[in-house]
Length: 241
Image (cartoon, rainbow, N blue to C red):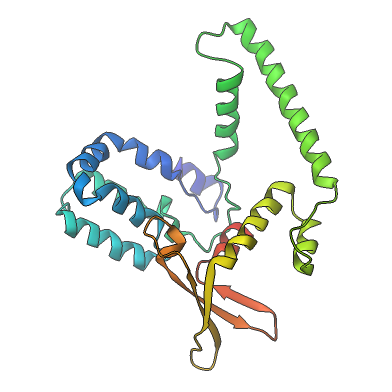
């Protein structure tokens, strides 16, 4: 697939599903999780995949993981590392995807279809009818979303920017925005000027290892005159919210 995409869609950024990559190697990983359960290998493994913000951070954390558990020659981990640029978030934080993977839409439809309409025992003539039922249910759902999307939304505050985006974003995106707006109150902000630039250091109040955002101090560069703010988390560049 990678060769075909590069040929037919030059310039397109191609990534693969992290869940599928890890799940492919799950039998061996499960053995490692059990073998090093007392040393929390499973938590540390997923922490290395999820938490680093940059490729440099990821590669340092990965090497530290291998050294800690003496797994430098593990074939499965070596295979995962060789594919790192295709599925590890640290390698494409600055690329916009809107949190939508290329297969996510079809996989979501497949999941609903299999869970609610058909199964492996469904006869062909029943499958055709169930497919029509499925399409009808999707159209009804889309109509419902269109109605809610054009209705006036209640906002949690009177901040002008929240009112503005409530008129622009879809219902689901606006919900995500509101959640982030509330979550931002859990951060401490301190001045951190660098070479004359206006910069801030943003830290989550919960430093728990179980919280991805709690693992970092984010640097934010601000150009107040132009109204530009750049955070190294790159959430805006990656998701658009």
